[in-house]
Image 1: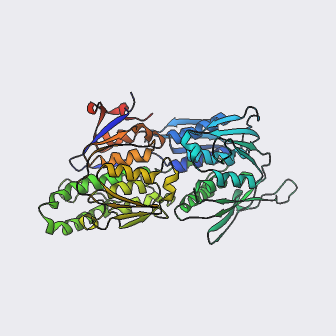
Image 2 (image 1 turned 90 degrees about the horizontal axis):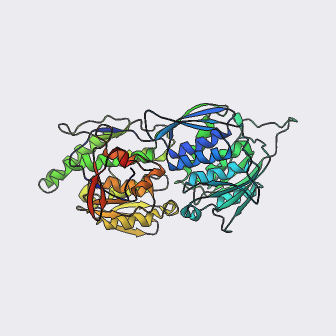
Image 3 (image 1 turned 135 degrees about the horizontal axis):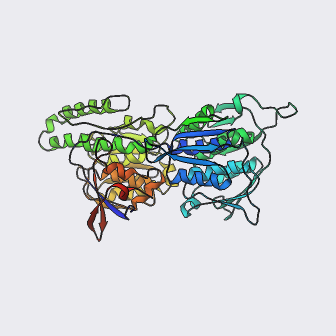
Length: 513
């Protein structure tokens, strides 16, 4: 069985105590796969995410000829222990101009962008292509940087997007480490051990340099950095925006600690995936206590809120989940990331929501969770926010991802009765006491499906179209919503046909394939 085309989430009517595991970070997993393939020996990745995007990366590496062996992870069904046998920086050859080696990247931005510089290290011709949406997503800044490095990149539609042909070079000169910061730009080059490499004659090789803009995506810079040690590239990053620089920092830190000569590497859980369960904790646990006071005890509401606020702080990562009264307990996320690599690890600190959140430097993908949470009466600070609204600013990057997420959030929240104002790249959400159900279009976007499914834990009648799109990063998301506590939330999920509930779903029925 598989997830139906349309499902309905039944709201939970009581607090839940659960400790949820979430799969590994997609961002770290796909970076680590590239680095492992370039390593000098066998690398074992533990806790690696096993979803559509990471499977695409694995399949591309296997198509190239790398030995990549995934094994089940007993701690998390959507993780794998992946062993990759690195070729010491050698990338297997591609095809010919008449018959290039074809690599399908689906709608995986990390795979498409990380592979392009990686393939330049090989020889012959490679063709990268994906689904139609991937062919619309930006690539120009990355392609231009690779051309500056001396590589031939051809876009089949002459628009600097996919499908594209990568003509591999033959030089595997290694470079040196340097980094300097100035306003709006940085210069980076990488080599083993932080020491300039020597040629066979004992001379330092000349570095090849390029400039790359991350105005549209930080993945362009990360892609170049991942292969720069082998390529001998010096990279100047321009237009560095605070909302994207955390992902460049993630790449740099990964380069510093990754076992280049082989060994083991642990992938930490995905913080953006965990955001849905921190939001569920607020919607289900906190709301169940606050609702009793809305109509009957208004004078006591602020005192009650202060009590709940103290409890929410205690339930955050590093704190200790516990009851406010009786047996009313918390939903928490197990092994919450503490490395500082993932910007979305800060998500719990934004609950209850502040008056304003920027995509630049505050939250990454989890800002979608916060936007949906803001429509709930108590998503921020309750009644006092109904007139002022909660402002989500500098959201331009969201328009260039799996869908135009700014427009999509506006459209689907409005369907649910929310008051949303879209002004340029800012969304203002005015909290509504009574949201209502709606049939949610997901736009083939996994995060739209998961955000609105969480809203369905509170709001009756939320129906999710094409829920299987969560396979991109979190294939067992709906299984975790439905599994009984303490490993799930115990929610009912129904198949909808002809406008009616026809079958209660459980187990394998809820896995996205």
